[in-house]
Figure 1 (cartoon, rainbow, N blue to C red):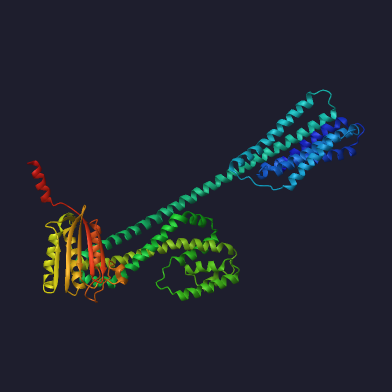
Figure 2 (figure 1 turned 180 degrees about the vertical axis):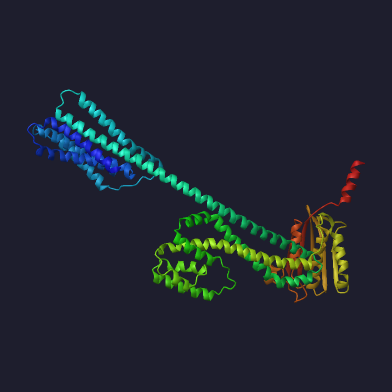
Length: 574
């Protein structure tokens, strides 16, 4: 297209020059006329091509480029006038034209000195350039039509000028017609190609969408199994905390912690891997697969079948050895990025012997990395799904065993006003035989101290805290129990006179299964249970410790008893 545009501009410049020179060529032969035409036509053609290259190459019309166009055009125009005068007679005075030559040369030199073409990739300018190139043939046709009209209507023009005008304009129109025909054909071909591509893409997208829907349904079913397994685990943990067999189950938990953590960790890791592929690269993986040739798909299927196989035993030393052997083989076979490709093939479970037998004479070596990456990502979905299934089954078995051992059919108790003082006295009565001879109990509690809570759960808190206080003193010393109102809460403090908590273990006191008691004397769940119960009551539990003893503080929301509310309402009505 650009070549036709350039040819049209050259024809127009040549026609213009001939039309200017022919009326004045008396006594000047063709051999003399051609050199006179050559200079101005060359410069003017260069200027015209400089203008044409701006939309063709998407150039920014900066100072250097414009200086080149103006310099070339000015030199060509000056040569055109000078030669036109020279044909008639030798000009007596060339001062003006010489000045024009000098100025044009200086401008051209400035353009060359500052020469720095830059592309203009702005979308708006791109559309403007396309429009200019489409309008150029129309402009040439209009200009040619005007030339023909003027050549036919103006009187006094030599016949040679008319012939040149008619011939030149005819050539320009023919070039413009050919250009437009080619442009229309190009647009038609492009439209046909786009239509075929769209039809193919629609078919591929529909197929891949159906495959994705099937995989998603499968993954949803597996995720539901995971959710049920986790929900069952939470229910089992609640039953474990509430069960009367807490001491025995606490010992069991230490032994089965690994059996629960391992499948749950595998589930979380596999689910993250699935989500990563689905959220980031799923469509790209399908698109890459659809672009593979039939031979590449055969290789992909072999790698994929290897990749989806779960390995029960994973020897890191053996894997490193395989990885090195594969990397050496790939490097010897001429594969680029052999180390990276070896890592992927090893992760897919490929053996060095397989690489030696199948990849030594592979023709498309540069495509193997993309094929292997695609197979690894998609097989990772299958492996992750299988891992989730196996881990969920294993966790379900452990949870079912816990439920069968510790399950008690007891519903949740609703929150209600609870008298903390009464609960503390009840617990002290239970421990009376432990402290009656060598422990002094100091009470600082009001007659009533109601909080909003669950009586059974809070009793378990006071039982654990008072029991720990007695144990820390060796059942000898003094325990101070206070309960005071602080704004809209009640603060309960239980202080012992023991040796305090060591600095090294202060941060671990509320950890589950952490205990300072000897084996068999404690489960390490007591303070963890207390913390969970208090948090469920929208409260707070913390401690302060020193060599003189430890104080545990429990803060709970206050609540007026129902009886007091009724009495207040009755008094108001009276």
